Image (tube, rainbow, N blue to C red; front, side, top):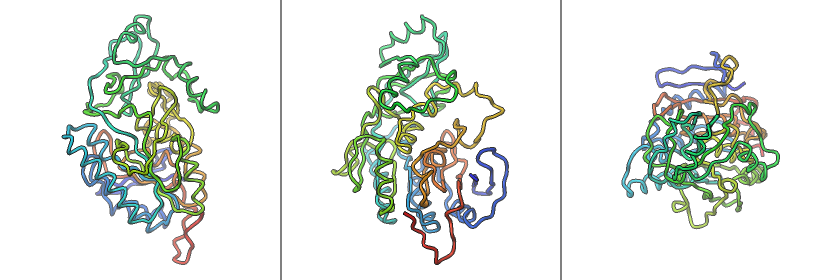
Length: 396
């Protein structure tokens, strides 16, 4: 069914998630989600209360729905550090507060945690301006390290290879081969013609200035985090792709919370934490769609929405999922999508929560470019909900 409920504090409206058409549903589960949205207005992406909003909203959903699997994303510290210049002491305090909020959720809920950090951040050194190429350079709001190049001239390629802050340049064929060599069943884009001819990667601390790049100038960027920190009592894994199996293999005996902390590195994790690989040789996932989807599906997902993709050339008449950013379908084989037990996803990262985990219920901030437009709840299914007080909620 995939019903979207947009809450703008003064009103709520319901929409079909796929078509964007208005709907009017009043099932007990929709009433529950509507109440949780109304009781928990979003304070804003960089507001110091934003992470507490994630905890409070998730606990309210748990009280009403009793899920076995919870997916959370705490992102306030990432936005606060990406776009604003804080002292070292202030940054440290912001990051420690994020970890403390995750711990507060674990203590309050009793769920077994799998806490994943996306890695440290680093100051912006400078921009790589590719606006003057003969071909077309495209970066995105979700990327600083990678940029796609379409139809470059020989002069363009020579120019790119001479730019010292560029770490590497690879052709589309080389890019695909890099991932297929690790993952032969790699998922490729439906329309290969919209992929860039070349991918370029910036050295750490540099960001691309191109068409589609972020509207707000970043102060800090994600480091090139080839390894990311994880802590959980469920055991150790060596690759971010293994986390899905680790969680699913324990859901028959545990209620589990997958908790993401964006922009937080290993120094903020406990001593028993460990590091996971975050991409094949020379490539690392930035905090964004590819990272979330790789974590959730257990497979590399660099082409779910490839860097440099010419999204503006897609067939506009057939575009679906208007509340889901550039995505035009619900990703398959995600952590909760085919899980028979009950699941929720809550986070202050727009779009990703209702898309990438496949949870029965998703609640997220409805914010764009730090502008707070309220909250959105998505109900993907009502089939698992029984509001009767004697219903046994746990389903392993």
